[in-house]
Image 1: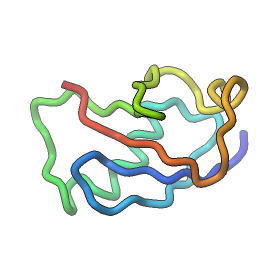
Image 2: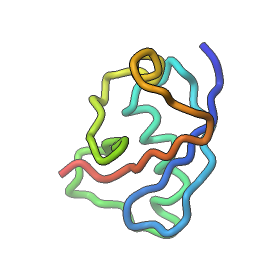
Image 3: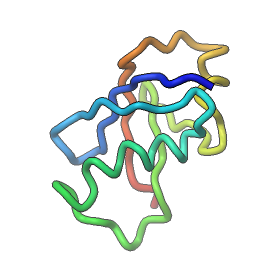
Image 4: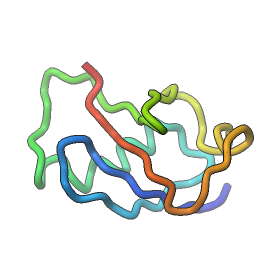
Length: 88
C-alpha cells in the first residue's frame, strides 16, 4: 500500500489532472478518482454509461486489476499518463 501519483485525463476533457492513487487501487477505483475532477465540471454526466474504463497505451485495462499488478509486469513511472473514458 503506497500512494502513487498519476496523470489522469477523461476523454473529452482538455485538462489532465494529477491524481493521487494507491498501488492497491483497482483501475475501476482509479477511474473514479480521476473522473471526479472532470465529470460535472467540464463534462456532463453520461446516464447511458455503466461507469468508466482506464486505457494505458491505447489498451483497456481490466477494471478489477490493481495498479500494483500492472507495475509488476510493466514499467509505470510517477505521473504516468492514463486515459479514462465512459463504458458503453
